[in-house]
Image 1 (cartoon, rainbow, N blue to C red):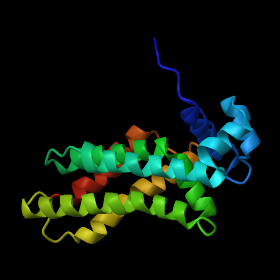
Image 2 (cartoon, rainbow, N blue to C red; image 1 turned 90 degrees about the vertical axis):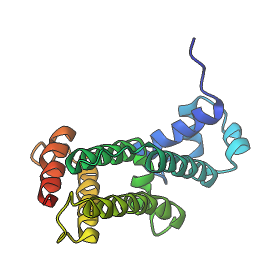
Image 3 (cartoon, rainbow, N blue to C red; image 1 turned 180 degrees about the vertical axis):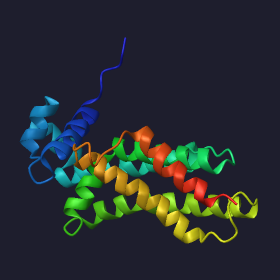
Length: 195
């Protein structure tokens, strides 16, 4: 027998769904309450207001980010395998938390807190990649001539660009299957780093 989600989770999930479907401005307390099948007063009691809901979403996002990027990444020492696995983890995280990224892009000037939460993704990814590339260069698994900073930013830009394209466009001329992205883009880039 599965456990029923709490009202807190029902409200938060309804809010997240509406953020993706209609955006922050159009996600009213009444729409959230209707989608969560709760009374609007319940939302006010648990979250105070829409900004309280947004803060809860951001907190969840940052907690998940720490768990994934600080604890869940396993490296093998094989540059191709590791960059594909890191990219897969990044893409899965972004997909799971796309509402924060979308709101961060749409509302960054009016909501610096959201913008900061979105910036944390590439900042943490960058730290992991910098450490990884530095170790791989020390072990002679990538060329000594590789500019580590540039290589790190290329991996970040490849992944962020793919994520934005995947959530924004449906045109098959612009989007590719995730596995094709890992195999044709990330693997290709990783091979170029080998000595």
